[in-house]
Each structure stands twice: as C-alpha cells, then as structure tokens.
Length: 133
Image (cartoon, rainbow, N blue to C red; front, side, top):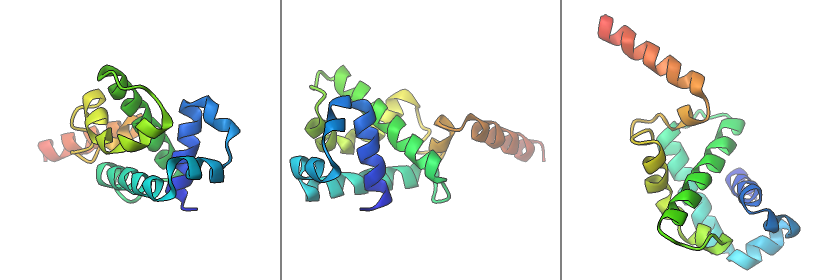
C-alpha cells in the first residue's frame, strides 16, 4: 500500500474512531479499492500542489489530517452526513474546504504553514528581505 493511502486511512481512523475496528483490507473493501485509490491520488495532488514536493513524512501526515478536518467542517456546513463514504466521495472538495479555513494558502504554495508555523515566519522573513532589497 502506498504511503499516501496509509496516511489517509490513519487520518480517517483518527477522525472517525468507529473505523478503528476495521482492518485496512476491510476498509478498502467497504470503500471500494478503486474509489479509495482515486481519493488518495486527489489528496496527494492537493498536498503536492499546495505544499511542494519536499514535505517531510510527518508534515505530509499532518497536512492530510488537517485537510480532512477542514473537509469535515465543510461537509457539516453544507449539511452533509459525516460518513466514511461521504468523506471519500467528497475528497474532491478538499481544496475548497481548506481554502475556506485558510484562504489562499494552497494557491500560494503555503499549505505546509498550517501545520508548521515556523515555515510561515520563514516565508515572511524572505518576503521582507525581497521587499527591502
């Protein structure tokens, strides 16, 4: 299983504790392997576009988890029941969900700053230096 898929399953279990009683194989069967692989690919693309390719494993896991938390809040705001199938079916809404919580971070390539505030300080410092020089 790919690392992104493992991280997605781990994050789903953290958000929906009832999923902890299912093995990875059982969850993949329940969700549909192809549908889950597509969702994992969408999550990977979103993280890569919004945070870059040099994200550490821990930052990546934190970004997947935070992205899913934003998605859950977004789904609740549009009165969608929070089920594992709805989350996987709506993972394509993660960019809008994250953007509603952290406007323009992903578009600006600053997504990793939501899980690593020191990165935001570094970005601001570089921008100030560019403006001064």
